[in-house]
Image (tube, rainbow, N blue to C red; front, side, top):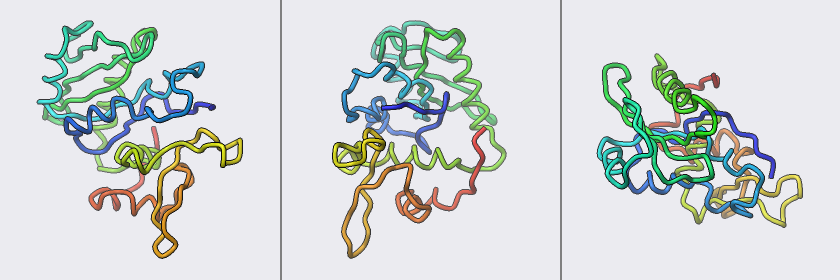
Length: 203
């Protein structure tokens, strides 16, 4: 499977509760040939989302952190050889907010780059979403039973790509590639408070 993912990306809109936080720690658990790819870590590297203060404190208390740097700490347990969870407590627009992201600690400065990207994204003057953020939110919010990966019945060039179950009225349901959802299908899968946000160009 060819990986093509933005370097640092928001994968959920809103504040994830504890159940959703743990679920999103491995958004790619169902992928075929898990951990057998050359760079599966690229799926996780740079993913981030917002959590609540209680979830931030809970994760701090689970294990002694690998390190602490002012407003950040890293988990001692690694997802891959060099990728681990980094938790951040950041003042944004006069309010303290909390975030989780995956950093590749083999890349010098990756936690600082993550922090800068989060602050820049969350400081947008107008509430908006990029097309990529809409698709990532749908993937994050969709139940495991309704999402998966294109298998052997799909053309070889599409195998391994993410799929979601779409309801097509009287025609029932059908699996569609996440990246091929129409605007109407995207709107139907987003919660009402996100459907009408203006589009934003990815930075």
